[in-house]
Every structure is written in C-alpha cells, then in structure tokens.
Length: 455
Ligand code: F0G
Image (cartoon, rainbow, N blue to C red):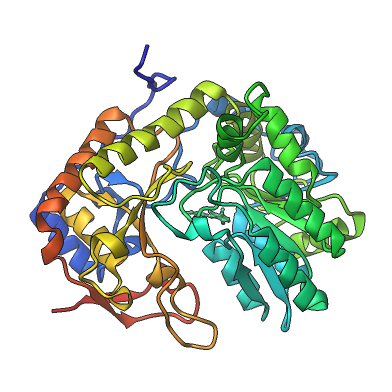
C-alpha cells in the first residue's frame, strides 16, 4: 500500500474549540502578537512545539498506575534508568524535570565567564543556560545547514574543520564539546553517525568531554537508517546505542523522543561529574532517584522509550512532515528541505522578502497563520536569536517559522487543513507587514516580549 496510515487508533479524544478569523484577530492583538501569550483553547491546531504535547499510549497510561512514589529508591526509577541505559548506555542516569534543568546543572559545572562552548547549533534554552553562566555559546554547523534549500542529507552535521580550528585556537577556554540531535534550531535536520563519531574523536584529541543533546535521538536514528551508507539493515536501537556510546554524557528532554508530557535527564560516565551533578540536583530538583519527577512520570517515560524506536511509528512520523513539505513546495512556498524530523520549517525571510529581517518576517508569518486558520506556529529566527549578550541586535542566520508536529496527536486531515491555510496565505502574502518589539525581557525574549505591528 502506498498510503502510510497512522499506526494507531484513537481511544480518547480532546475536543478542539472552533474560532472565527474575526475572533482570532482580536485574540492575537490582546496577546500583544506573541503566540506564547495566547490561551491554548483559542488555538485550533497547536504546532507551537512538539515538546510535551504528544499523546501517550494505552500502555503508558497503564504504566502510570504502577508509579511508586517513594521518596528514595523507587522501583519506578530503576525501570526508568534501565530503559534509558538500554538506548543510551551511560553509567549514571540522573532524572530531571525537563531538558533545561539538565542543561542548567551541566552548565553550572562547565559554564562560567571566559568559557566557550561549541555545538552544531545550540537550542535557545541551552544557549540561555550557557550565557547565564557568563560563558559564550558558538554554533559550528556545516554551511549547507544554513541554506534552507540545500538538500544535503545531514544538514545538522558539525563542521569538523571549523571545530578543529576552534579547539586549536581556544584550547583551555573550551570545557566541553556538544552536538544536538536532531539540530532543532537548524530545521530539525539530522547528524550522521559518522559525524557524531568524528566530533567525538576531535573532542578526545583535545581532551574535552563530549556531550550529546539527545532530545530527538530516535528521529535522528531513523534518518541515519534511511540515508547513511551501511546502516539500512540495522535496528533503530542499535543505531541509537552507537550514537551515544561515543559520548561522555548527554542532556535530554524526555518531552520529545520519550513520549513524555514532562521529564528529562542528565547522564555521565564519569563518577566525579555525576557526583557533582547529583549534589546540585538535590539542591534544585530533588533526590537522585526522582529528580523533579513523580514515580508515575518515570514509568510513563520508561514505557515511552520502548515505543519511540518503533519503525512503523518513525516511518509515519517522518512521512507526515514530508507530505506537508511536498505540498507547500508545490504551492511555491520556500520550505527547509529535506523535511525535518519533528517539524516543517518555512523560510519566512525568503517568502516575505519585502519585510526586513529586523522587522521579523517570521513573526509576521506566524501571526498571519494564526489569524487566518487558528494554527499556532513558532518563529525561529531574529526574534529568538537576534539579541546578543552585549545588548546589540542583528539578523539571525535564518528567519524560519516552525510547524512543530506533536507526536501521535493530529491526523492526516489536520495536515490537509494546514496546507489549505497556506493556500490562503499565498493570496495575502505581499500585504503582510512586519513588527517592532514594544517590550522585551533581558534573556530569551521570544517567550514573553510584546510586539507592535508596523504600518
Ligand atoms: N534541547 C533541544 C534541542 C530542544 O529542542 C529543547 C526544547 C531543549 C533542549 C530543552 O528541553 O523544553 O525539556 O527544557 N525544545 C522545545 C521546542 C521547547 O519547542 O523545541 P525542555
């Protein structure tokens, strides 16, 4: 059969509250044109994030009932730990309430003024945690990864020559090397197994620990299986293990590729680093066998980790994104290609080229998509990355709008509705106007800033 169906049927449903174009125009104005400020029941299709928004399976809900809420030594922790180690064979698995809590602990240890941390592309919370410690975050993704239309199969790859030169030049200032799979900020693009291994070798050559931000490890492994020579006959689990086995540790948001609504972890091989992290954890998150999570959360994640590596699921998930990318391309809309693992990214800078990058073409597109169709998306561009620690502002590498697809949550007719919304947008594209920022906080401004439309 050519049709790739959702490999599940629906047992429980959540109603969507229908709204009109007129209502939405008022609602987004009241939200100061920031989509994060909207009430989510005023959204028809919520593509703000794929983080924590997935549907849990019947087996996960059943596991929730098994959750043991003991403060210390809960069997739920050990099931969680074993499920993580089955895929990511690190010695120490430290639960946290979400990914950024793991980052905050890691950079309380590796950050600090004068330090420099390279990554293919830092996600915004990773960058936020690094910069809050006084260190600087640098992105060294390959050039193809910054070109939305370049169809390189692994656009998330680290630029190895640049990393080598960076480590040679900055030496002592670099406490660790990171890589993010998939590269979220660069379009959900994968990193090849060979590139992960070479990055690890370079880190080792310079004596630096190597950490993987593994949020979307299963999607990354699916791409490796499809696209990397010699990987076709291997299981997703084997590929995932190979990716993590060359690292010294990882940060994880279990709200992505663990099918969790909440959760995360930090992992190390090194006993001393794990000890330091656990001490911090006890102060900020909780005892090391629950780390800010309930026993039932740990159970849901343990079960979720067995489901995320299912190939029927991964095939359907990636195919949905490809389908949307193909249809939007056919409408002449510039989209990041190939389709990303968790999201479809529109190149707003090029599609709305009449709007200057410092007037935020991505925000203009995201607001219009909400007004027209009630779809909530997210700007990943100059609003998110344009403000620098020294207070200056410059255009980000790209101005993208991300349609992040929650896991197992929406169906094919929702995908068709998204495409129809873009057909409508094609009609009004040239009349869309940019935005200014009326107020912003000192860090990670995109979450709470207030916009004002430009005339
Ligand atoms: N790293 C990456 C690559 C991420 O995409 C995220 C979150 C985090 C770390 C932080 O994890 O949310 O559990 O604290 N990304 C979400 C997103 C928020 O919408 O892309 P968290």
